[in-house]
Length: 241
Image 1 (cartoon, rainbow, N blue to C red):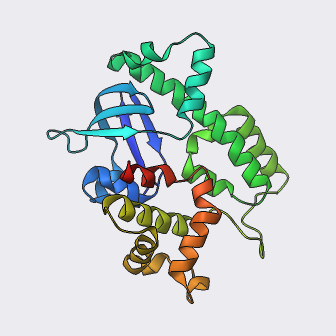
Image 2: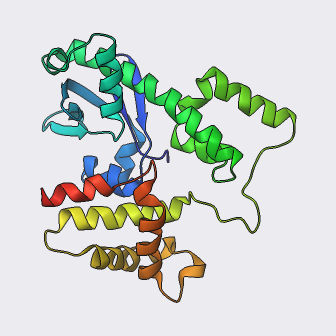
């Protein structure tokens, strides 16, 4: 199954790569429903991103989905420099908001293409993982040229032995599970949420974590995940606002 979920907006499909632990919230934890695109009925621009009225069941009830990407403020700043005011964006109807969303999605494709190329060169990511995270980056000319050059040179990184990799899908899922548990349970500590995530998903725990799985997850969250482009820190903090 593809990672994350896909929205159907007008005639286009837009994939949001994210851990299943988070994406499954949209479909009442029935992960099989993530295999099909979710239709967007209406949408608008909000101060920190976009609000979609989605139809995950091909009929009522409809749900509101807030998409508040970490890079949205930077995107708005660039739009502002081109003469587009914030107030104008917030007053757009579905047609206008969908146009802004498509512009943002393409903008993010270029940004992630640059980030993925850097991480692949540093041995932190593979092409396979990049495709899983955001397949559209392969449509960006510069990234496509990088991929072609690497393939022709026989330099297709698979993850170097002995090198500490940053991205690990199983650990990301554990991190996402812990973040969701924390977000959905007022009063639960982050340490307890990490423990619950480990207990509920033993098959995701790396073999090297056997001595202290909860502590390892907590340390990895602080060391890498909370500072990365895959961060769920703002998602967790929203619980206590």
